[in-house]
Image (cartoon, rainbow, N blue to C red):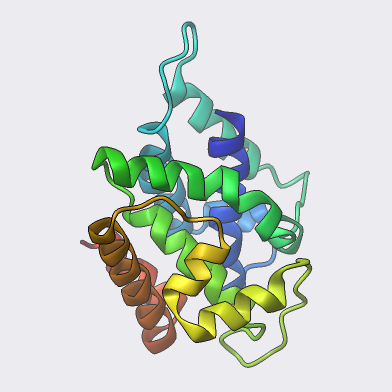
Length: 195
């Protein structure tokens, strides 16, 4: 629950936020598009992958996390959350994504989070400024992304999917990446939220 909802949400909000020129976590979660993306969509997809836990109210836990993310006194930076994605994302996002794909449950926003991560790892923001990437596999992942979506996803620890599941995932990921590149991260996110 903690890894997927807390750590995974941290990663999922960090990459689109940075690309949208937001530098602090409290500012990110208060942004209407990011807040909607994380609380109403990403967290809901993740929750569907969790087993029920006696005495735990997932909805209250998610609301508590959003409140914590929005605490101005903490002033946590987006770059801190965005560091070492290759160490965090395999368990926090990829594992629930694989489970969602196999169960046939919604995973649109998990895929979008991975596409934003990929775009971030290319090393320049949407204004052409260099992104200070702190990730031991950052360059390797960026090279894989330039090769193909499949290469990037496999290096990100996506495995064990059927041919049909791979085909759909690659298409979703490619469409998100193209939308980010063509329209910018904010517009790509707005368009996704409008569907």
